[in-house]
Length: 345
Image (cartoon, rainbow, N blue to C red):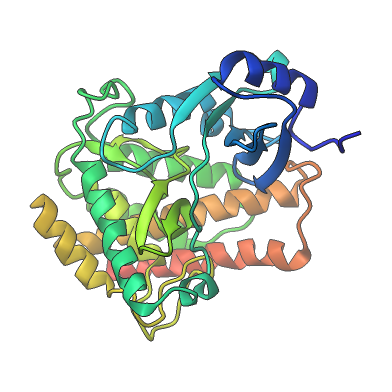
């Protein structure tokens, strides 16, 4: 008898897969890829050895809008019509009776999530460079997509992205903060005071970095862009600045341990900016504003995760004291980095 797997109703999900995914053949083996504070992601292997990927909200989800499976499925279906690499969208289930929450299924894409320096070091230096350049090229391609042409014109409001985001995350900070951090409030004030003019409207991924793409490490290219849960329409430079929150130039200290950059081979962030500006024609002279925004928003998100674990809202998804403290201190260091970026303007 197969072991139960948290987040999957084997019997009902099996029935749904057979009925709704072309060629899927029971029985299925399920394996958790990632879980915890974000959406739960599972590999699904059918009787013929074909692999799929199933995504569902975390079992302790408290913000339903942050885990909208039908919306995420709509986005990857639309982006799949373009040259931007995404996993094939195969089916979505919004009937919570099947698995306790909506979920969707996509095709399995082989690749490595470069979420550590060790994984980056496993690649040849020239492949690190080509992967870094392709990461920014894919982002430029995403930002060139005609949102109306692919059916995403109604995904969100088009203008005032930063204004809405600053309001949203300021409110979220007030709701989730566990202590006073003057740097967070100061950055929010400065962000609101000095909003740049939005340069067009694009699909804004919202969490674009090496840790959210699959990389073909043998070719040094992005194989698929993942984790579209924060995606909306908005200011494309927010994605470019967000890369800068994670990116470390070769030989410099990596501020985010879940990013591979900072070792030889990866291009400098300034080279990514120059390449993006050349590809898109956008003015990046105020990119530090967007780096500050990305770091500040991540600080608020980190505090929210810390607060939920602290108050037991994440259910049985255990966390060590060391990990808990990492979220706590992460909020503080991200807020300080955001303030530094604002002061560079």
